[in-house]
Amino acid sequence: MNDDRHVTIEAHGETLAEATISNPDDDAAVRVAVHMASGHLPAGARHRLTEAIHEVVLDDHAERLTATVPLGDAELVEGIREHLSDPELRAAGSTSIIQGDVAPVEQPGRS
Image (cartoon, rainbow, N blue to C red; front, side, top):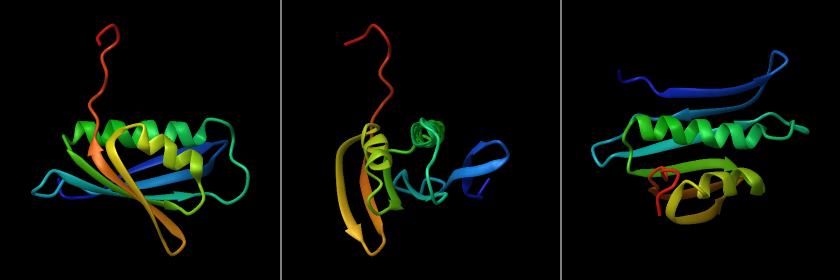
């Protein structure tokens, strides 16, 4: 399976957000391109998207992630950062680029 993976968040038949996730390369790194619908989005849409992205990345056993997101979308950036260790953020034109090592899922009741 060499096709990129796609995650779509919809409400009432409308696409709110999409992410295209590459398959891991030889270094177990993935690239994620996020596109958000313009205008106001329902509460939780960004959170649902970041959780779905993280699930795909974990399923693919990726170890490193580089994502491009719309510049200024702090909630989306923070949602992705929560799933990375040692994240780095920089602006590039009309996007923000966030990258870091994929953090493992924390098991409930473990410290």
